[in-house]
Image (cartoon, rainbow over all chains, first blue to last red; front, side, top):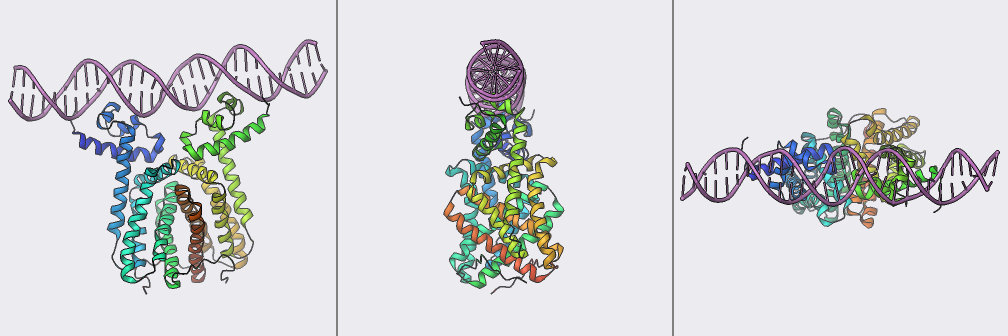
Length: 211
Length: 211
DNA sequence: CTTTGACTTAGACAAGCGCCCAACTTCGTG
DNA sequence: CACGAAGTTGGGCGCTTGTCTAAGTCAAAG
């Protein structure tokens, strides 16, 4: 048997955990299943990590880091509208390219919701924060009102999360391509109108223009 | 101890299951926890249900039914735009009024995603289908193109799911109120533009109007 | 070659799981 | 009153879970 240093082993366990969480859920991701996926055994896992919780903490950080990278690398440094579009498309394509990563992210968010401890919300919150920083940088140059910018991460998050749920539930890659376009056009419609309307909220509850 | 007929007991177990699933997840919803929540014990649960799976089937149907009711009762029978708005607001308010129901729904959808069996997707699919039927009825009178109508349930689903994740993760009821308005305005912007543009897709990837 | 420290593993442990059985209580009916 | 059906329960079954212990293997330093 090839002897592998702990550092590499830990990376293997993190990758394995992402895969197992995606297909079995957080609670279904047992130490034995993760170990098997990583071509190891349970004792090996506990040689690298004191507890299952410690491994999951690393998984958590791995997901958060990758999220931050995707958002920052998607930044086109142009207008607010284009930046928002690019970030959302980057996130959606990230899910599309790696469904396991997307599913694990959903699983972690769902797990975060259950236990209202601060640590749980971290992933969700951090992604929002990074997106907000990128957008604020562009908005400052463009002179877009702050309260408009602050709404954008919520809308991007809502749309991309919703896209992820639909795509990962049905698993239809062809349909997902079309839905990415629809989702993009939804953001485009709203943000264009929102930027034109200015700081005041354009939320009309009744009697919206018909015909 | 008061003696309770099985029919009532089953209803109690379903309610208890919704609560336990919401706060412990599908896998964390053990028979013992559900029984305790229903002021009963494990043996009682197995007197009413042959297996845990049988109970969960009833929970599944309970959620699906309530969903259908919310969508149908939200139907204002006016325009496509107003109908779409009303359905989405109805769903979001349903989550807002009963976070446990919302959380359980997310949990079931998430569980459905894991096992790609047809039964799992049923809840998600059925809700989409009911919404589509209601919209098609209105659209026929209004003369709205079919392919436009077919996109609406996806957008409503995406937005309301995204809203649910955010609201249930943070648990901030005040913020949720504002986010419901934002989400409503997003749907309004997109659908208004979509109805005006006609059958052709208005998805512009690059060079969207800037300033 | 020996030693040392890092890597590897089989096996056992308590706790919790879904499920089941036999015995008990309660109540409407003959 | 007696009796059978319906409701109720403590305790135990086999299995899986996370974690740990003790023994074993191997590469490189002395």
